[in-house]
Amino acid sequence: MLNIEFLKLFLIFILLSISVFGKTIAPKNSAEPRERKTQTKKIENRLEFQKDRLNLYLKKYGVTAYVLPFEGSSYANKWSKWDYLTEADGKKLKKYVDLFIQEWSKYPVEWVKKSNLKAIAFVKNLNVVKQNRAAMPDAYGEVLYFDIGYDIYGELYQRSTIHHEYYHMIEENYFGSFYYKDPKWNEFNEKGFEYKGGGYLAYEDNEYQYKNHPKKGFVDTYSMYGLEEDKAQVYSYLMTTEYYEKFIEWVKTDSILKNKMVYMRDFIKDKCDEMDDDYFKKIHSKIKSK
Ligand SMILES: [Zn+2]
Image (cartoon, helix red, strand yellow):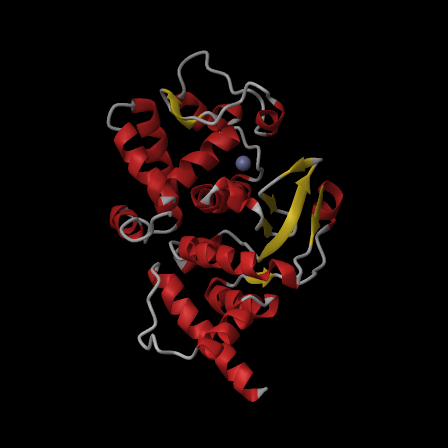
């Protein structure tokens, strides 16, 4: 038993080092007995193991990870439903946590602390106001929910969703509402442009098709559904490496998008001085989706 506990702690340490540097390192001793490898995998796929790994990692941010059943806030209970993970989800959770730690490691501690985020919940079958959702921000409980079951949409989707949903919490924290109609932001759009009226409409719109940079001023079609979604997507495109590379190309010829990028970068830097030009260069020099 003691050996297992020790192995668990050792593994957490190794995995954290690997996640932070964003690459998988082949074990030096490739002659490691197969039995030991199987045992290692079994432990890694346990919910308890990933919970400990997450909490050890998130500690510096002052954030708690919910992996096992927890008490949702009255807001979360009123508007949403979810299922708690079971041991059968362990393998999927492990993969999700690998990716989550890579993305979250882009954030300086100061940025997260100032956002007042208290916890991150890892769940499945998340449903918000009768729509299936990959994530949900709960500003009342200061909890960010992630459904780990969206791997079918691809890694890039999962990575960008982490930042997009977190931005909704940031918006609420600094502007008082998820749905703040930022007048400065609206000024950037072409005269006469109107958002469709809310991100939820995209889920109900049969005509909706996801497309990158469909029109001057927008990183994708989803951004055109609501001002709050536009801001969250611009933020997400700044933080997600593969999108960032596209984004910096588009702004060379798209003055509206450039204004939005500058606005968002200034806002971020104003709250967290460390997040300057060099910071963006640094965080995008190492992580790529598969
Ligand atoms: Zn959103």
